[in-house]
Every structure is written in C-alpha cells, then in structure tokens.
Length: 361
Image (cartoon, rainbow, N blue to C red):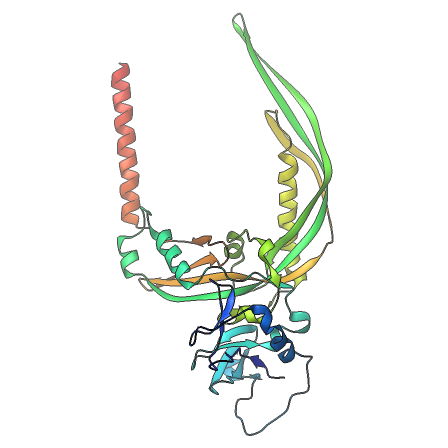
C-alpha cells in the first residue's frame, strides 16, 4: 500500500478535488464530475491494514522517511504524480504537492483507529471566505484607514480540523438561597419585607456531540467561537472529501480533551437548571452536585477556513466556519480614532448636561 493517495480523473488523468458548490468530486481540467460514493471502492482498495515496508537504498528520501537535525519531527513523502518531495509534520493527513499542486492524502493517518467516524464537507469555497473577510472589515469605525488598503491576504487555506464529539447524560442536584423583596409606605415610614427561600432543582439533561478540537496547533477559543455546526449534514467519512484541502490527524487524545468537554457540559447544566428559577429578587447557588455519566465519544473532521493577513509587519488570523460561514477574528484599533471618538462622546455628554442644567434653572 502506498503512503499517499491521489485521486486521478479517469478521463484526462488530472487530479480531481472535492467541489464544495456541487458537493461532488470535480476535475478542474476537463470539468468531469463524480459522485463521492463512486470513489468508495477506490478508497477501500488503497487503505488497507499496515504491511511491512519495502526498503530501497536507491532513493535518498523514501516515502514516509523521518528527517533529522533541524528538521526533527518532519516527514517526507514522494508525490506519485511528479516525484517531488513533500515535507510535512508527522500529523499531516491531507495537503498538496508544492511542485505540481496535486492533492495528496496520507492514508496511514486515516486508517484503523485514526479513521474518523464522519466528516462535515465544506459548503463554502475560498471566494466565500475572502468575501466574508471584506464584510468583516466593513463598518468598523475604529479600524485604521490603511488596514483595508495595505492589508494583504498572506495565506488562505481550507482545513479539516480534528474534533472529538462527546455524548453524555448529566444528573444535577442544585439548591439555591433566594429572596423576594416587598416595599411599601405607611404614613411617614417606609417598610421593606424580605422573605428567604430555599429553592431546589434536580433532574437529568442530555448532551449530544459536544465538540472539543483535538489539535494543539489551533487555538481552542478560536475553534469554540466557530460553533455551532449542523451535524445533520455530517456524512460517513471518505478520503475523497479531503481532496483539495488540508487536514491533520489529532495530536490530543479524547482523554486529553475530555476535561474541556466536561467543563462545558457542567456549565451548560448549571445554566439550564438555574434558568428555570424565576420570580425572585436574588438567587444564589448554595449547593451544586452535577454527575456526568460516561457516554459515547466520536471522532470527526470539521471544515474551517483560515486566513492570515499582514498589516505593518504583523499577522492577523481570521477563521470561518466552512459550513455555516460564521466569521471571527480580531482587528487592529486606530488609537487616534479611539481618542477622537471618546472625546466626541465626552463633548456631547458635557453639552447635554449643560443644556439640561440651564433648562431646569
């Protein structure tokens, strides 16, 4: 079995890729389209059980060889189309040849226990990501005027990010101290009555597909901000969906990511139960016991567009949900504009106060 897999068009021999617009495999050279399911047999024939490697002293860089020295942690693969060397980190699952541009998929990163349970295919393409960036920049008052003109997209790439998805049932027992306050006037006196209550809530709540990204390379807060995903559009995993995109296998196990998922489920459970308490002036949790029952864990690849722009030598990273189009990213602030806006607000507030005081007088 070869270490890398490349999908070739049977009509012209060109490299075919997954097209997000048609949700089909498409050859960019002859425009021939294929249903993804038609390539299932090709995938099954090329992803087999691990076999003993065949050694050859003729090639300096064998497919899958590890590099030493300054390049420690990197692996080289040989492109089957042009013979060029593809250098990548050891977690790479899908990429492209830097010489011929053909999409390559590292089969050993996606077989056996490393094979995802399902994937959500890209629905939005590269142009949509660029358009969302322009929309994200529009209407920002404090954005430096030159940012739109001088910023350049340094890199934009579609990545299938590895995620662990947790199903879980939570059993909660919550007690709160609550009060009601009633005030009234009687004669020259003002009376206030405060009543104290012990409010209890208990029950079960279920969670389905709580995500936690399994990549150390990506910021967890950035990935969390791209939610939610519509899991009803998830499909059984096939390597064909990765053609034309980047992908990494997870480098954090489900056990490593479990504390993050557990924390989110506990916080959501607390919020859900407290939201049922109403009609009190104050409500302070006094006792909270939330038990999480181990559920099902699944491994999935979810679509993300990453965009890097450069402004005054600094890189700004933006991300877009490749399914829904949700776009996030921090922007630089023009300090001069910020001071001007603050000064304007202060001047208007001062003027209104002066007019109000003189009107009342």
